[in-house]
Image 1: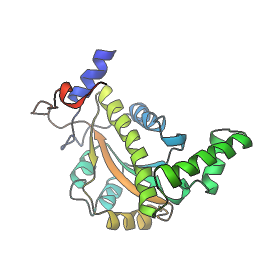
Image 2: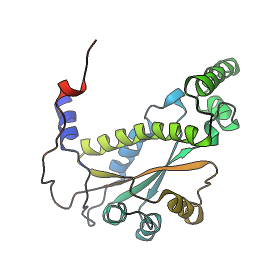
Image 3: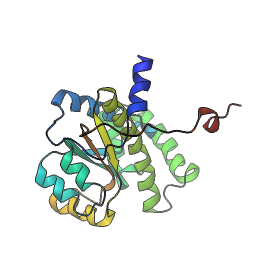
Length: 218
């Protein structure tokens, strides 16, 4: 099992050209989504939202201002836009209070204690409340954990992928509001990612620094 996992990691790459005629089965894409859903996040607050785009017209709409995503989107079987929550991630938000109560199933006294720890973390440890950007960027960091897990899960079952950050964020956010019904007061655009099957095999071997260059033991 370890060998199979590392093989998938070594062979995974950012696929630039997908086979438009090959589609991912529902079972396999559900597996990828589950890897994202089960990903860890700070305090377990899951600040992500996944928008799965499969229709050709919607793929074109969401990548209108993307210099890296249009070819990926139109060729891929599934194209995903990942959003992160903004103001809802404040320690005093009604959303998080309900999340701890209804999703995490915590008793009131634990919610009160966890909220205090979370408030101290935001106000003192990471200074996340200095401006809106700080809190939004912190939430986006959590969503990238889900991205890594989804990319690896896809590779493990032989599905190719390509993360996409090549887009004009402000203009794409406007499209998400106008044509996808996204409440941009609550959600921020983090990244996009394409999933599908490669049109032709990768020509170049993966390169990485040797382990001794990146790891130090103390």
